[in-house]
Length: 301
Image (cartoon, rainbow, N blue to C red; front, side, top):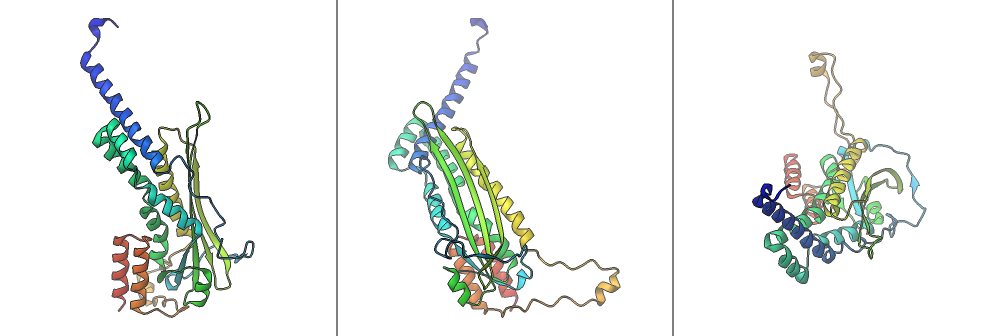
């Protein structure tokens, strides 16, 4: 290439694009440090810690939950879930005051706003919690949050589900060499009957070793895939009864509809609406899902 063939505007545009990308990285890296990305997520404990003595859970042998439409489900959040969702919610806040200053200094206000948007989308746990409770809220007669298995056994519930959510989140720059970058999301649902026999167990998990520069974006990708896997596997465990195909229109008209399940007495409308409000307050369902379920409850009056 000769000096005459060099396009000054192209060089300028390429240079500006490079500086913009560099500025975003500089804005994200201080924010990553402030949000705890350079430290691992909370330690991962036994999902049943504090709920059952180690090794005491006996398998029920069940692979599916039949008649879910007639059941009152008690949802219990494991210690892992409480700690990891709290950590993720804190990380979604993005950078602190000092890192916000330096991020804005190097990247500009617009770049800093973009960094904050990425943090909110990646780490905000509301979408995660709404997605993992959606299969039960959509299919069960009623879903309530309870603190432990003893409350489940003593209450008017048909089955319990212990939800266990954990993250692995390591962003560690080595000294010259030896950096470590890994992310993982695991969602597990353990079903219990009144005798505290466990089964079925639904689990979805993925671990990835991303590069340094793609770390934040890959966290979001992994979470979305795990949520999708969990929803698909829950659909297999919580089958919704469907009418069998009829041989003829006349046969379909003659056949009476299936009676509703009668395994457990219905709670009052006020109790069901209160349980729904608890789910919404715990951010385990979205406002739209809560409104849809509220209309369903009121339509049964």
